[in-house]
Image (cartoon, one colour):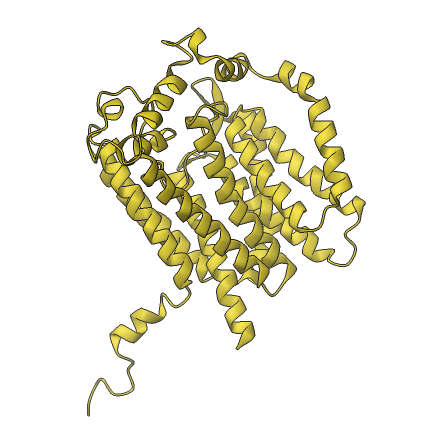
Length: 372
């Protein structure tokens, strides 16, 4: 008797594992990964082992994306409250017992592992607010938005106290996007803008000295060209010197003479601009635009309010990452330590973005199942 009878061939079984991947989104992400690895190879050329570390980071992010793509949105919705609660508890733990590194208290040592709880909130925050509005789908008045604002402010304040302005901005943005897609009125948005502008003097007084210096440096980096203005001056020189087509792969002088600070992480866009010029930057921006548009299309076709809010928020999180980082490197925004999505070296941000991409694919896959 043939032992293979009744067994499904290996290839179809293997292929089934990846049917959850959205083809359009997968191609965009693959293109970004290829561009990221090429740029990272040049940026990390003088850092032994860093390029291979980034390849491993991508492998981990891929596994996280695949796992998330296989989790139905209904299961994600059930995890919203526990994950948000755990994130807030861990942030309180950081405030009380966290490790201090480079003047900031951002890490929590659990004995067997050292974690950064603020990263959890980048996904837990939109999950929580999307769940909240799903439960109140037919009664979204100003009271609901007030409660949502409180849920958003609590972890944001805890992250700001660490201090970690960049992550706090991303968490605030993720929560705000959910509220925006949930239907917050333009009148409320106008009032929020007025309140934000009126509170600027208070915010300025509460900022740390180094944060004020970053803002002042942005306004006039030439005041301290060899000190606090060095980052912005060198990155803008690199961006401008690339010209239309760039200096060529591995031929960036600002990059390989080590003038660009943090060139594998926060300032990798300067490496791309110097070596591949305006054309390389346009390719990157087109890929980001396609990624965001695809995410918004998935959101528009999502079967439930929860799925629509999550997909819309995740799509605009990618936009926020890219806008803040490119603005920072180009000298139009203060340096706040926000990585360039899928381009910057680092495992934590890659895993977070991989999780977000996986959730988008899960929502798209669920939409297909509903249609069939």
